[in-house]
Amino acid sequence: MIIRPTFGFMMRHPAHVIALGLGTGLAPVAPGTAGTLLAFPIHIALLQFLPLVAHIVVIVLLFVLGVWACRVTGRAMGIADHSGMVWDEVVAMLIVLLVVPAGAWWWLAAFLLFRVFDVLKPPPIRYFDQTIKGGFGVMFDDILAAFYTLLVLAIYQRIFG
Image 1 (cartoon, rainbow, N blue to C red):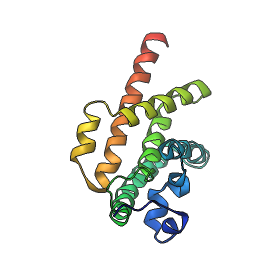
Image 2: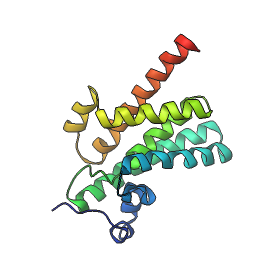
Image 3: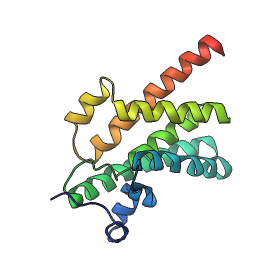
């Protein structure tokens, strides 16, 4: 049985709070977009309070935490990668924001490209999305979407920058 996440469901377990992106995954429309947007204030806070190495360590720890949280929450919801589980978008976008130059244009381009790659899942993203299951699978395909995003932006910067 597949469960539609509610605030009550989210609050039953710390893993649910994390997997559902601190509540952004409860958005009735485009929860993945809401989760992706959550990465921006987290990134700004990390920039304000942590040196680069610690920032990277936090992102790695958030990825590992996401593997656990998405595994636990997916089991509880009856579906391994429910659309309300958005921690994968949060962490992947944090990686993108760490690499791209600061600035409204870069952040907007990064956001839009990431959403396109996350939704369309071009090869090999779709393959990994369909074959790697559990919490790691949920998190991993978004890391690939982040890589595609960074690749496109690097090419753009190399040609026009």
